[in-house]
Image (cartoon, rainbow, N blue to C red):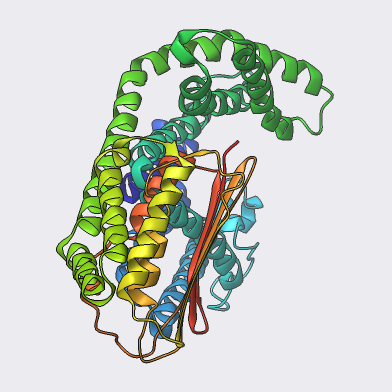
Length: 498
């Protein structure tokens, strides 16, 4: 995904450089024949464009990739990256300084020398090798900030769980559209294709709205609110509001004019009458592909989760420990506790075979599974003043539906890593609900020594899998915080259901 975004950006920069070089030739009158004085100013201008291109390619094809490949980054890696930016800033300054010496842009008041003037007006080129270095560093710092944001966005998309392919498709398509969006006015300006003075104003006003409306409609409004191609008041209201909002950014091009109302209403009408029907046709072509990807992602996540659940709960370690515990209780105090333990184990296995395959189950069933699991774990842990096990499961208002086995991984990890017979240990489980939310918190001690427990050999369900299921079923409606504080590990999950 990162490569695709970067490829679009590199394509744009390369094309922009080629167009800029062509524009230099055209402005120098190449069609009428080249003369030595013209060549003396033409070559430095081309050289500066190529210098900018080479610095850009070096950053994106060498500096940033090398830095990202280092898994455990240290001070040396950051210093090396900083040194490269300082050296590249100096290289830009020196290159422009040399070009200024041969082109003498001050004689024409820097007319046509935009890249030169970015580094300051220099009437005495080569008088100092540091001339323009500060401007070069500012320019690279600005681009470096953009590159960090671009890399961060790419990483977030690649780690978005089951919706990675969907977000990747959206990001790649938007980046491709941006290339076209920016190249059109550059080409028109370079070749003087349109002489209408207000073309660029109308272009940026309309094109901005088209881009925003396209993304909004195809990737948000149509998939989420247009069910079975049936119009509803809610959909129409959102369509009118979203298209109007998408026309507002164009105001930045009109802040110094009195044409804002006319352009705003005209742009809104254009988006509604032209862009919306076009985006509808595009969405109809993409709909099957988007739905197929979304469904495939959901099925893949569910299948992987079910497999991990079976491996984690119906595994030899868990069954061996549970049966061994029941055998011990039968030898110690007869059949009562043994019968209760067997019943709890049977209820858990029935839950795994029946309820676990549904998308949502009643909260009481999930809580019953938790209670059975905790009860079996208590049976196999010898009573000790050093060990504190506490389960506060308040189900008074827990009449909601929940994704099956969403809570058990936290309790399983707590028992797997939080009990040490030789140290003070504790596991505290808290569950409460409100009319529209679920609050779940597990705290467990973190032992200093390695406690030998056969069940620790099993991999368990894992928090990564839980995060994927949360993102799949509760995207934007949950908060999950996990981490160690001193000698205690805390996992806290809050889910909003409305």
